[in-house]
Length: 103
Image (cartoon, rainbow, N blue to C red; front, side, top):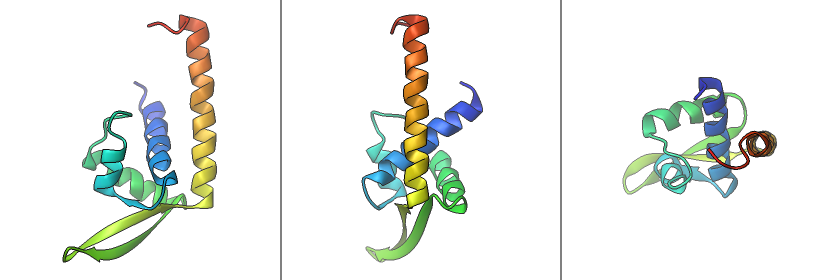
C-alpha cells in the first residue's frame, strides 16, 4: 500500500478512536482491534504528529503509581477526522465502481 495513503488511513483511525473520548496508547490500540492492526511503535509517532499539528492535546496523570499520557481530540482534529472519513468514503465508491465490490 502506498505509504502516504496508509499514513492518512492510520491518522483517520486514531482520530476515530479519540472521537469516542479521551484515551491513552494501549487503549487506542485495543479500540482499533478488528478495524486495523497498529503497534505501539506505529501509534506513538502518529500521536506525536497529530499533537504537533494541533489535532490532539495531551495531559499526563498518575495511574497505578505510573504516569500515563492521555490524548484528546481537538475541534481541528474532529474536522480532520470528518474530512478523512469523507475521503475514505469517496475511495470506497471508486473501488466499488472499478471492482463491483469484489477483489
